[in-house]
Figure 1: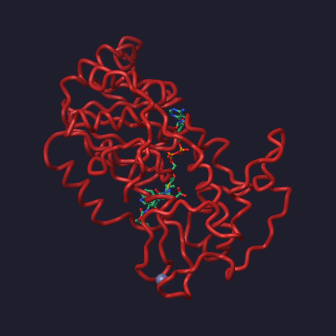
Figure 2 (figure 1 turned 120 degrees about the vertical axis):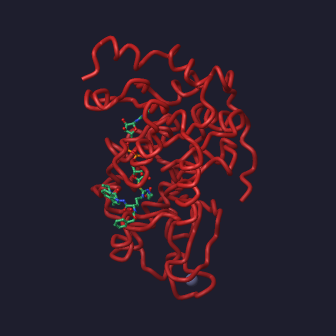
Length: 307
Ligand code: BV8
Ligand code: ZN
């Protein structure tokens, strides 16, 4: 159990800045909490339920096979939300850190494309679980790397509707409101093999992550000791993402830094000497924590996304 003295050290911004200024090899592992301030729901808490479905249950090949219309409506809704959202100062701060620290690599579990829209250098960004805006064939190798059509097709138009009456839940989200049945023939099909359905280019539970990306990350971690790991807005419950912070730790050298709205007693108890914990909103904390290296974060203009 971290004593109050050590708790003070664990959450000392001046001590953190001292370590940051000496850190060249920095890894970040980000989750849904990073995009919370952009208005996107997280998986735990209220955002974890879509209609009366657990988001995690819909993010599986089994759910797609069972009801592709429902799963496509779920993803079409998240595409719409992510398109109408904007990167927040934490996304821009991490992008600026990448420009200022060539030894910085950002691993993100988020599929909302906000890192890319915040101009995060692509060679220092690994989107572990893919993107809502990549489309794939369920069967052949056809892929559309960047598609922001909203709605994607007429049958998915309910997901792109804005809420007529903000005092009431969006009908689409109201489990009491039955959903119009969507026939498979109405869903987007692969332009190559024509017969098979398109699917969102995200990694579903039980599916492997991209091998080349995993090898690239392993190589990066192996190359040299890591000075700091920033664990931002994640419940660290999904693997392999949740394993990277400790995987990158070199005893006595690496500071693991937790930035989260809620840091549990257990989390504090797991921290080691030289680690840090900062409790609060990532969009406020990350720019402040990185200021000695990145300066003031300006809400930069979004550049056209280049694929
Ligand atoms: C795989 C894309 C090989 C789709 C996602 C080892 C042990 C146990 C299980 C496994 C294991 N290895 C593999 C598994 C199985 C499984 C897994 O990890 N299961 C878990 C549930 C135990 N992993 C897989 O299936 C992976 N594939 O391993 O393949 C294989 C295959 C079969 C069998 C063995 C091996 C694929 C996992 C990827 C799944 N796809 N997303 C989509 O998005 O729809 S995961 C998805 O959920 C997200 O990408 C993310 O990863 C996760 C949600 O977690 P977070 O992002 O952290 O969000 P959460 O809401 O949980 O937490 C938010 C946090 O933010 C909270 O802490 C909160 O306090 C904080 N917060 C909130 N607001 C703020 C904030 N912080 C700061 N500021 C704020 N404002
Ligand atoms: Zn195909």
